[in-house]
Length: 66
Image (cartoon, helix red, strand yellow):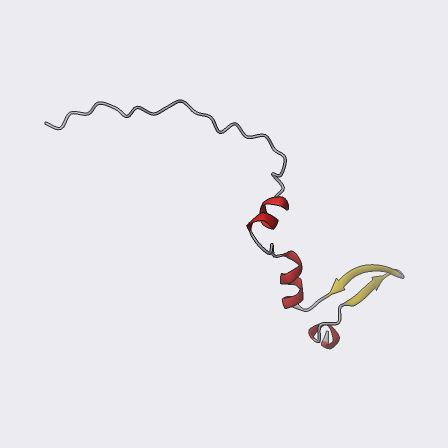
């Protein structure tokens, strides 16, 4: 853990095979956080989904004020 805190990721094995990587929390946040809005949208699980944004015009409604 001390090495991971010093920004040196550590491999943990299970049964002789890589199981997990221990990284500093700050380094992890840099890996998973989008850098800007474009990155965020491009990494969205909804990327490529067709969404129909058209709707009927809203002409308001008649109300009585008296």
